[in-house]
Length: 297
Image (cartoon, rainbow, N blue to C red):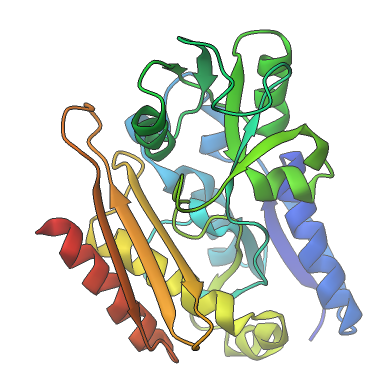
């Protein structure tokens, strides 16, 4: 086909992700260009996402570019993609996943355990707030918005003792040396889709579906389908402290762990774990839905 236009947010991390997809497509002989855009999610930085419309704020403008034919594909961090896409859009593929874990970044402290009593930790993720409180009830957790560079700058200015970010973003931008501690999933369960990139297209573009197929990581697509099914079944949004993480077992089955917190911090964390065959999207989705039912009991 002729030129493929990729719609992307203009933050440094989003541009890295789009350039990464561009390079993969160019390796297959396609001509590719980028269409950089600023989304509502990038513009509203004084309030938490849960208060201003949730994850969709990061994808609406990109979807409009697809709808109007100004772009062919949109590259997203999968954890920013709403669980139900609007009519006429679909996820064409999920790329091989980067590290899905959360990471602690701090100029002075080597780990969460070493943070002093009452230390100020920055995050605007309700999931991270709830899981941090479960690990260290003494911490003062303060809101932190902005792109990755903005968050690091606020930390370096001394506004926080530590911040929690996705390890994947730091690694993709070559900032791995800022990571003090990566939380294993059993300590801090990641968000659905964390570390994965998804490519969105219009549903009527069968030509693009075939063209993007070589970029799809089947194992990661199935794992994230299970995770997203948990969120979808729970009505997952930014206003719900929900975690879901799937990993393949040595026997070839898929294990899903899910956790639901209480935003007020008064009720205990609800947790679920299931292992099942997940050889196709329907099985992966069913596994996620079953985990959600355990959380709802």
